[in-house]
Length: 137
Image (cartoon, rainbow, N blue to C red):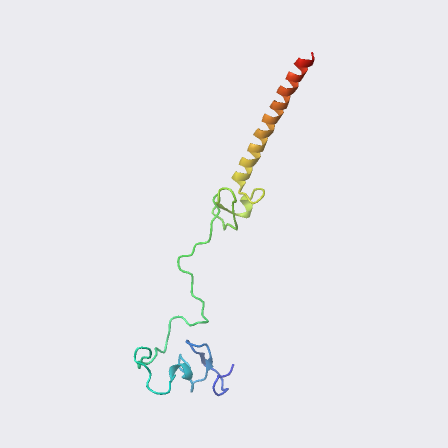
């Protein structure tokens, strides 16, 4: 890799702009970022005369570690959850997946509701048939 100013072998990357620099053109910050200038007298409220710090804790290309991140956990087994239940909005892992985007408990609950509704419908039809047979006979 080569220095952005002279093409010599680079020894580092500028913490401010990310450009590569050799030992002659930078030390933590490249020569361009360290010695920026403006024509005339700069306004005092916008420009400082203090030298920029040569070392920064984090540069633009360096990823920052996540602070306080905990991955989403399954409501049942605390494994990494990949989905959210559409009904109760709890997170669940692939092992506790139900039908149609629901967790296992909501899926069971919906099946139970369908079974109860089916039993009521069958009883309703039986009552109608008994009434119909009593009228005929």
